[in-house]
Image (cartoon, rainbow, N blue to C red):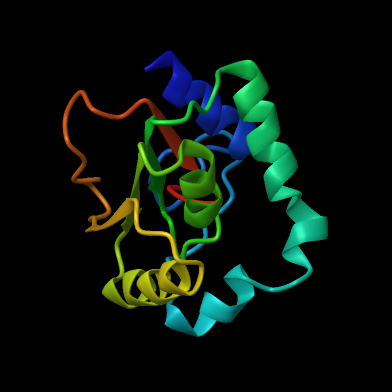
Length: 147
């Protein structure tokens, strides 16, 4: 549990409860991004803006992302972090890619196939349920999700 919480805090600087208004700042939270925003999730500028590999390196240094681990990418979208996590856990590991939109998961499957990565499972979640197997997740990552 501590590993999952630390991963969340490292990856999501403004983690908040799933509600319409942020409990501390009072700001309205963003709505769910539809498929129209899918290209934005893999825009070339994202590498420089977010340094995803450096973020995963920091998580790895702090708590580890071991080969063979079982990890969850919650709010996976089209798989931007899923394919990076799959490469890190290797063929002995598994990534659960969770999203609440079937269209995002369909595109995620295409993106994973392009990269020839098969050690993942796409999971159609819900706003109030992640639908992950109990007691089997070594690390959960949330990036710009559940805000």
